[in-house]
Image 1 (cartoon, rainbow, N blue to C red):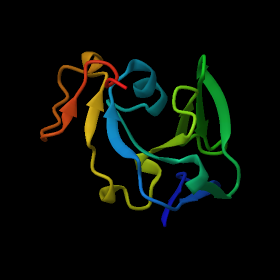
Image 2: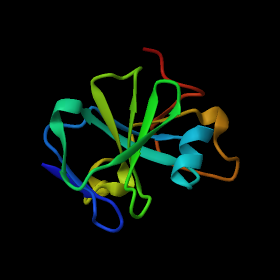
Image 3: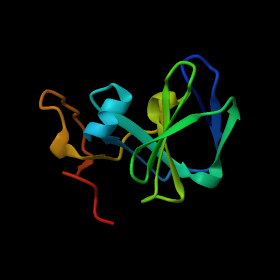
Image 4: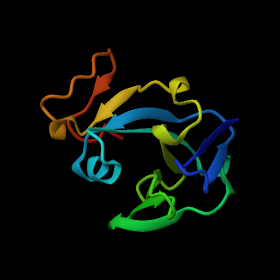
Amino acid sequence: MTNGHCLCGAVAYSVSGAPIWSGHCHCNSCRRNSGAAVASYVAFANDDFRVTTGQMSEYESSPGVKRYFCNRCGTPMAFRADKYPTEVHLFLGSLVNPQDFPAQFEVFCADKLPWLSIDNDIKRYETLPPA
């Protein structure tokens, strides 16, 4: 079982089951949404995810993409896309134990900020990896 919550604690969630993947996204949309140089996610099956306290607010940031956040403190918490209908992508920073989910890859490296250095031996993709 994995748990997570927003900064103020008004929204909390739990996830059972194993993660599908974990990674960093350098796209402008994720960077702007998170307010950080890179957004880090861990993906789980929708059926393994449930909100346990409060309710996440949502908005459509682009066609087919929904982003979820706490409407009290603004913490970005999750991402869902029509392209990945069976998955929920959780912001790594909202997890109680983010250290348990090291990144396996980076996507949209073409958009990566030139001064950002992530030194590790993970796969890197200019855009999204091939299906």
